[in-house]
Length: 138
Image (cartoon, rainbow, N blue to C red; front, side):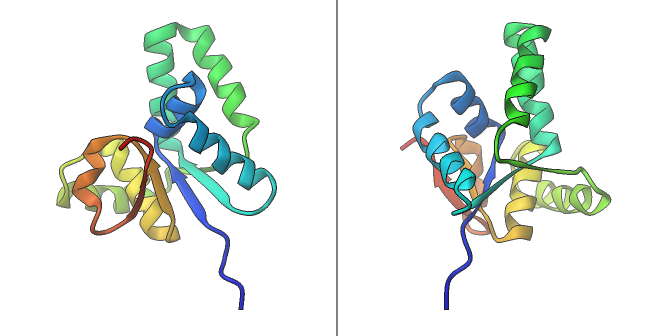
């Protein structure tokens, strides 16, 4: 019996590292290559996408944020909607753990999908007992 392919849930840290060529970029690139070959899948909450875009615009301007969005839309990443179910799940995570509200969406998605949360953000140490985390930074 074959195991199902891994599901990776990217948070904004992982995607920003990939887009900016920062530490952790190579691992995210490898995950995306696996996804393109159908060996795994990746997703990103719409809320985390918004986080990537506001950070890009704040640091580099609106034109860069629009370029970032266009680049993300070409990647083999499923964008998860901010549905009522997702909002309620993220609210529950946020109520129980000390982490940013946007990060709670990534955690909720990983829990719901049995996915591996990919991040380098140390804030996620608070949820390491409830979700599998692949750390981009040591």
